[in-house]
Length: 469
Image (cartoon, rainbow, N blue to C red):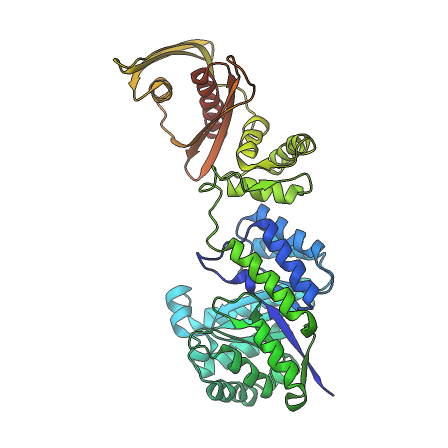
């Protein structure tokens, strides 16, 4: 009977500064992989709990046939629970336990002794198996591992309930014959490997990954980790073509649709090339080519706010999405600049610690700009004067002098919202406090007045949150 080889796509797990896919692009990529018949789609581990979980749930809902695999952290029950909560509604979910098995990675990267690593592997695999019937153990850097330890690690994982074991040639420096010998040696040393699915992952350091993967199949491996758009992994297109052409001699077939391969791979290449070296939201604030439409989901809008630098609560995400839909239903697209204004006016609304009482700005081509601002704090007037480099700078510096607080000005945006000589101007000010961004919006026929309102709005949000903490 011909063996069915599992093709596991790891395109989205490739880490590179040159490949940055957006939330929307990752969902589109998963749909294309599902359409081509990829058996398994590998996603990144959850790092940002809310956004990454939303991405997993969105991809789960978007695919029909492909299984979804997500890695979990070793000995981290909170991470496991979050991952499973996001993944459990998939038709065929898989949890991955990735652990280093070479002494270099164990001791110098993970700071563990070999015995502690074995214990971590066993406990984590067992915890995953208690939730999910499909658990994969991934032995990173397996080809450079001490052979006795690798045997113990794989046996520990299988005993704890792993149904698939993937051995990684992380260095990617083996020749096909060497990798075949390595796979054969593992089968001889670990009889239990024949009771589970053996997978392989080969880095393409010396351009031998495809050949190594095929040789592993010849030795009995039944799963290949590849990438539709490859930066460092085995090529999905190449191994599919090789296994299809050599199905009889290898006694192995793949479920990837070879007839659609070229067309879908071309679409994936275009999608990933579009995301390659794509500027982040902060870099793109003047790029009107990036936008959302009424067809975008709440998850996509939430992801866009993250790209803009915000860390919103679930309640604020709902408020932003409601305001976004009101605007998106009336116009063709909503730019990231407009989304900034929506966040500023809809999210994180708090009581005003500081309120504007009066302001006087003097400026001219022969004098420096001076701002005299009076604020009200807890019914008490406070005021300050500052000479700055322009009216806006003087006003913002005067507020800093009054409050005694300095926060990095992350962005200042100005746009007209009405036409004519007395046009209303809208400003958005973004202040950075620590690793979080807070925004405020102001609107007035006076640009400086609108800027002061926006600055105070953002400032009040920071002060309110700091007081709560």
